[in-house]
Each structure stands twice: as structure tokens, then as C-alpha cells.
Amino acid sequence: MSCDLIALANAGIRGLHPYQAGKPVSELERELGISNVVKLASNENPLGISDKVKQALVSEFTELSRYPDANGFYLKEKLASRLGVESAQITLGNGSNDVLELIARTFVSAEHEVMFAEHAFVVYPLVTQAIGAKPCVVPAKAYGHDLDAMAAAISDKTKMIFIANPNNPTGTFLTKESLKAFIAAVPKDVIVVLDEAYDEYVDASDRANSVEWLNDYPNLVVTRTFSKAYGLAGLRVGYSVSCADMAGLLNRLRQPFNVNSLALKAAEIALDDNEFLHESVSVNRQGMTQLTDFFRQQQINFIPSWGNFVTFDTGRNGSDVYDALLHQGVIVRPIGGYGLPNHLRVSIGTSEENNRFIDALTSVLSL
Ligand SMILES: *Cc1c(COP(=O)(O)O)cnc(C)c1O
Image 1 (tube, protein in one colour):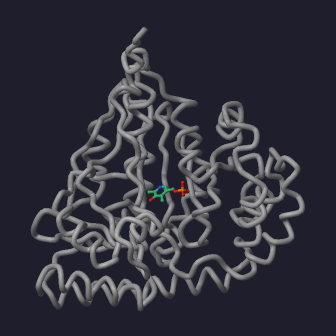
Image 2: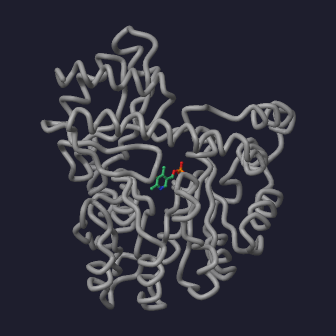
């Protein structure tokens, strides 16, 4: 007997498209029978994993027969003391992606609207669609969030607002003053999710002390990750900071062992490895200069970025350029799905990786 499983699925799920991840190195090597592929597609840390973390992980192997600490006690303690908050304000996740979804599922249901900006991080429309809520997409200003337009678009139905600062894939950044004024203007029954996945790359003088704002705004939640500057993308660990009441709600829905023991241990050690973090940020700064100098020289338009990636205009169909770069062994990220069909996003690599990208793009665009 045949059965239309698609028709059986929840309406929200029927309209979903799977997340398009950056192409894995092994996949391209397998497909093209080549080696020495450079992946600059997923905003990963080009320095890899820190040596200190590596050592700590080896000693954690013997513990793998046990369930992880469901409460992530030590990591939460460490984060709390670093951030100047209580442990009870931290929620750990299997990547910050997990926390973003937890937050949405905790507060949003099908009758609500969820607001985010055009070209904003794809997970916001994905979770909105999965819940069956209505997206409210506010047109971007200069590729970034238009906070005035977003404030004006808030209605009785708005339940949640997602803001990525810096934003991915555009790299745009909101000043702390503009962001704070926006949060102050949002009604207290609307949850504001401030996604700071790239916070560590922002200059200290520009960085918002958003965690301090939590004292005034119980409807605010800040998310961060160990996937980018801390170099732990493969282990999947991120967190949110909020008022303790909100963290308590998230904890009701959270899977008990959503962060594995290797990830908990690695994140703890990574938090103390300032040297590795500084090196990562410094390599990023140099790479950013290397790539943007090249774009300027070649008169390739790019969007100024505060993250560890740059989005540039290929001046033609971006996915054709993407395919041609793949044949040169360089993986970047097409972002047609973000409404930017002519743009590509390239993650900042080591200087050698950046050079491989520069050479490949030069050849593909016949510069
Ligand atoms: C990479 C990224 C994340 C989260 O990644 P995780 O690996 O799930 O922590 C969240 N938000 C933005 C904007 C990102 O680019």
C-alpha cells in the first residue's frame, strides 16, 4: 500500500529545505580525484584546534563510556565567572545552533511572527518555518540589519526577533549604541535573540557588552559559540546567556545530554587558552587585509566584514564561479539562498590558503 508520507508531515516541515552546509574537503577530493583541497566555506578556524585542547581531549577518552555531565557544571562555572553572571544564566547547546532552536521552540508557536533581517543567518528562517510560525523579513540596509525599519515593523504578533551581530553571511555590524537603543525600544513581551557567533573577532573598542544589558532586559538572550574563534566547530558546543528565569525555561526543553563530554572538556580548556584565541584573531586580521587588498586592487566589490569571512560580488552568477573554484580545489560558499546570487562568501584562511583562493579566483575570473 502506498502512502504519501510528505502529506503526513507537519505543514512547517513540508515547506522546509535542508540546511546547505559547506562542501566537505573529503567529498570534493572524492568527486574530482584531487588532493590538497582548500576549504574556506564554513567560517572555521584555519589554525585548527589548540594544542592544549588536544592534550586535554586525549585524557578525556577514558571517560567516554560514561554519560556526560548533563548540567555541564564546570563549563558553566567557568563561563559564568568569565562573563560576570551566575551559572544559572547559562544554557549550553550542541553548537549555538541548538540553543537558537531551543529558544525559538520555548517561546514561539504557529500563531506568532518571528522577525529577522533580509540576508540574515539562515537558521532563523529555518526554525521559524519548522515551528510553522510566520516570518517577518525586514529588508536590509546596506546588506545589514535596518534597526529602524525592524522597530517599526514590530506588531502584536511579533514574538521573537533574531539579530546576528556581526551578521553571517554579510559580515555587517551594528554599533553597541544603536543596538542598545533598539533593545530598549522592543516591548518586554518580545524576545530578542542576539547572536554573537563572531564576537571574538570584533575589536574590543567596538564590541558591545551585551551580557550587561541582561540586567535591564529580561527578554534579551545572547548566544555565542566555540565553533569559530575557539576552533571547535567539529565538537559542537555553544551557549546562551540570559536571565536565570529564561535559562530555566530553556532547560525544560533541552535534551539532557545535548553537549558531549569531549565538547564540554574542550570548551573549558579553550576558554583559558588566551594565547590561541589571540593568535586566531590576529591571523584573521592579517587574512582580512590580504583578501580585501586583493579585492580592492581588482575592483571587486565586497561587503566590509567584522567576522572571519568576506562576502564579495563576482559580477556574474556566483554559483558558476563557485563551481569553477571547486575545479581549482578551492571550496567557498555560494549564497544565492540568502538572496545574494552574484555574491560568494569566503572564510579567512591562513595566508597560504588565502593565496590559493586569490590565485584560483584570478584564474576563474580571468583577472
Ligand atoms: C556559525 C554561526 C552560528 C553557530 O554555529 P554553531 O556551530 O552551531 O555554534 C550561529 N550564528 C551565526 C550567525 C553563525 O554564523
